[in-house]
Length: 156
Image (cartoon, rainbow, N blue to C red):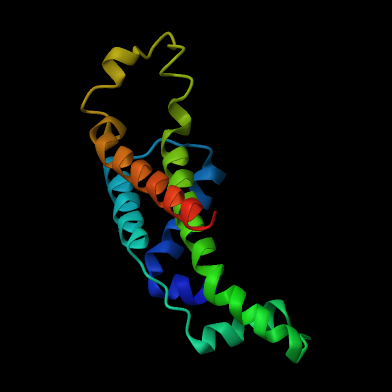
């Protein structure tokens, strides 16, 4: 199922590989182009709807419940139809939180504890790509929180 989701948006695979390269290089500064690319992929992913087809259900059952009895098959199908969509929505929200955390991680110390050669007042101007795209990031975080609230309210 994950492969099918990734195939719907190949940019997600590119983004995953990009994140891995960034972590391996230990440089967590992002250019305006990189942030814009992240925002583009996240915006596409947040509006992505995943219809769970019969083929996806069968694939899910084969992968996670290969030896399921016919008596239990009904409850698993019910889980797939009712609970799995909520899990997917939560995963989309968590993905947004993860990307926003990744984009801002290198700034947690500098913004609070200035370094000798970097003045936060000068560094965090509109020339800084993170500052430039902060309204977009805040919108995505707000969207993710609303999405989580909707899932929580619907499932309580």
